[in-house]
Every structure is written in structure tokens, then in C-alpha cells.
Image 1 (cartoon, rainbow, N blue to C red):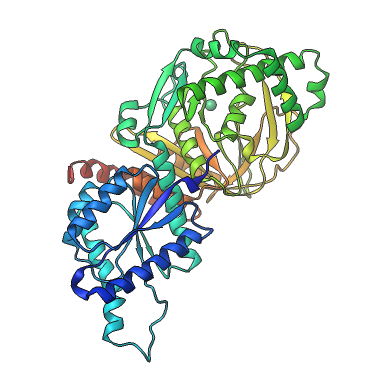
Image 2: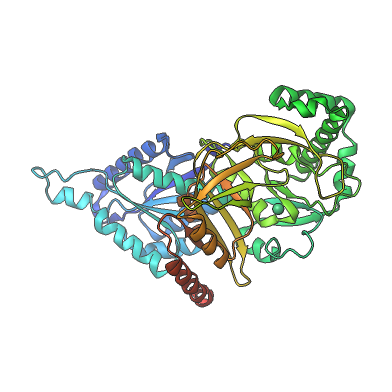
Length: 503
Ligand code: MN
């Protein structure tokens, strides 16, 4: 569903007329070669499109205006092969609304010690040309990614790839629509927030719909469609023995399938990229959507339970960042702990809604009662999550700003079987330890809901926060409680003071 090859980043090389046409021809040829290599790189998930060398203020302004209005363009990679005086970039950069990555590279890897002469020096002067380029962006307080190194190197291409994924997610948010069925879970604070501020900052809108609006779509689904989807469930998943024995299992699976089809139709009709629901508002719904939310997430939709629209939008963004990568991404909740002197663990899960993109093996299709909500027993997919590195991310409304909080974790196999647990789960050891991570998370005001991913990296989220212009706080193997709390205090001051700058 999500294919990042639909997006372009434009490769824009700065120069000037000082060097004469022959040198500029060489600059163009070299830039084209680099753009082509980046386009062909497996580390870069989008198309990289070479653009003609910019040599005058007018050309810079024009390329920035074109980038702003090109629907497929998600950002610019800029580079100055030669010197490109930066006052000629000011007007263009003032207008530019797309993300920018500054690639500080050189066409040649090594200095040709025996052949080098002044012509070579004049042609290959990114070492100082890019410093002039950097100055004007720092002077203008433009947030951008800076990637340094030889353009053929994996590490350089991977850093650019990470930024492309963040830029694609950012692009996807602009004009995105998220729908909420019902409101927030009553009295819960962290899932609340300022939707107007979010739309101004992030570009997506969040609007509410009565659950009855969805029920209309659910009831319009035909029995034939329901039967087909139940058969698809049975073909795709293993029906658990206990569920297979339930006389009402097929009817309950049919209800769940009907809900999934109704939800899909509703989301398609409204062009939504994600949704939230709440067990407190299910009037005329037969079940809380379980397998429906799970399968919609697997198709790339954002989801947040209990009205959690911020996590819903974040899950969607993380799905876009993760497109085509190994490892899944899901809505998640820190559910319960296993304290251990050696290594404490978190069991992450939700009442039902965990995305099967993080499943190890074939999920088990099960129907069980749900203690809350007072509805019929919902169908859900039950599975474990494969071991390996992962992260949890939480987006918070701090009142004067948004904060993205990230904790790197290591998913581990369950130490013991969990025969009675009727929900999908992931078990992880937070970095640097559960004790330090949870204390830091709590100091930072991190939510119980997160976007969990085995594909998205901290670097992608750092790039994403930078181009969204929001705070990011990272809890990883190097985190110490004292430094982390000081960082939060520093950020309070920074985000209070930077409000007025340049605006
Ligand atoms: Mn929850």
C-alpha cells in the first residue's frame, strides 16, 4: 500500500558563473553522476532527480518555488560542488517549504596527489563552498540534515535514506485526515491535546464522527461480503482450538468481519489515513473492533485506541517511514512488568489492537470475552513478536510545544509460555534498563500508548522531529537519569525562548 518510489527528492547543486562554461559543464556532469548513484542506491527509498545547476539568485528562487508546488517532491538535497555565494540563496530559502538535506561531499574520494593543480582545486571545492552554504542556513535558523562523507559510501547513503523516509512521512502528513469515532477515554489526560496546534504544526487534521456514522457503513455490508472475509481470515490465520469449538464462533467472526468491511468503506469514503475508537462509545456496534484495527494497521493505516489521535497519527507516520523495510510497526502499550535483578522486562500489548506486521509466524485467530466495553466477545489475532532491536515512540502535547519521546529497546523471546494470555504481545528489555528507561520516560511525561517499530530507527525519528520543528528526547543505551533530566530542563528553556526567533 505504501510505496515510497512515488516520491522524489531533487538533487540541487549550487555554483556560480565565475568559473566559466567548461567548469560548469563538468560540475553538471559530476552532479548528475552523483544524483544517479543516489537514485540507484538501495539505501534510498525514493527517486533522486537531478536538477540543473543553480548559479544565480533567480535560479535558486525558481527551483525552491518549483519544489514547493511539485506534488511528488518531498524535499531537496543540496550540495555546492564549487563555491556558491549564499546571499543568492536567501530569497529562495525563505520561500522553501520542503525539507532540506545538505550533502557535504566531493566528486572525487581522494586527492590526486601527483596530478592536482589549480584547475582541480577550483573545480572541487565543496570543502569551503559547503561551509558558505551552511552558514546562510544557520544564519537563517533553517533546520536541515547535514550528511558528510563520500557519496558512494553506505553510511552516507543510509543517512540520506533515513532523511528521505522522514521526509516522506512528513509529506504524507500534509493534508492527511484522521478520524475519531467518539471522543477521548473519559478523564484520560495524555491522549488529549490541542488539535488546532497539531494541525498548524504538523499539517494533518483530526475530526470526530459519531459511532452511528460508522454503524451505517457496517450495516450496509452484505452477508456475501462477510462470508468471503471470514473465509479469508480462516485461510490466513490459524483458528485456535478453543475458538473452533465455540458454537457461536462463526457468528462472532462474522460480526468482526462486518466491522472490518464497514470501517474500510468508511475510511475509503472519507480518504482517511487512520482512526481512533473508544470502548466507551460503541453504541449499536456489536464488538469493539479488534481484528479490524489489527488488519487495517497492517495495511498502513494509523490507529490509536481510547481516542488517542496523536499516537494514531504517529503510527501512520512510522508506517510510512518503515515502508519496504524488514520488521513491522504497531500501536502499542506498556502493559505490565517483569522485574528481574538481571534484566527487567516489559510486556507490551493492548486489549486487542496490535498490528500483525510485528507477528512472528502465523497469527492465531481467537475469540475471547473482553472485560470492558460490555459488548460481544471480539475476534483478535494473537501472536508473539520476533526478538531483535526495536523502539517505542510517544508524541506528547506539553502545552507550549510537542515532544517526541523515543526509547530504544531489545525485543526478547518470552521467558515462559503465555498459554492464557488472549492478546498479541511483544516482550522487550528497554535500554539502558527498564528502571532507568521508565524513570526517564515518566519524567518526560511519556504516554502509556506508543508507536512501536522494528523497522523505524532513532535516526529517522530524529530527522522527522527536526523537520517537524519539535522537541525530541531519546532514551537509549547511553542515557543516564541525571543528564536526561537536565536535557529536559534545557529544552524547557530552549523551546520557551526560540518561539520568537525569526517570526
Ligand atoms: Mn490503551
